[in-house]
Image (cartoon, rainbow, N blue to C red; front, side, top):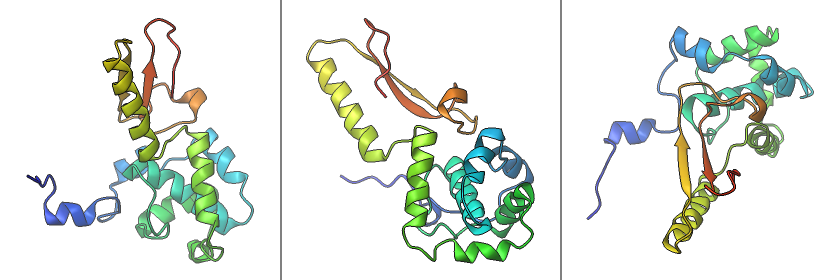
Length: 173
């Protein structure tokens, strides 16, 4: 029997902005640290820098990439533009002129922050569960933290799934 976990309003708001983030949320999730800025500044053109920063911080805030990467609150764009020294946020409209650019940027963000597609995380979990049934003890740790995502070298508490073999102590993520 199907069970609904979300109300219709919650389902409609899932995976997108449902209003402007608070000032505290802007400062927590949309602040660009040095590692973020280094990735952003690798992009050519202010529209690509702003679009990349928007995708990076949106994934951090919402937990996924937006279907329409430009479907963000104006306050978010202003906050990011201010950090990047971009005066004209209207340039963001050029970000999707080349259809593949947002997808390529998503891949760069996934690689830089060790993010996985849900299907890959699901496959890893199934493999872990199957290994447990075969008598090979393994431990899985789901780490979730309010700490914003950081690149692998600085993300000790970032949200990710890591599997460890108790014998080797090696990560299989």
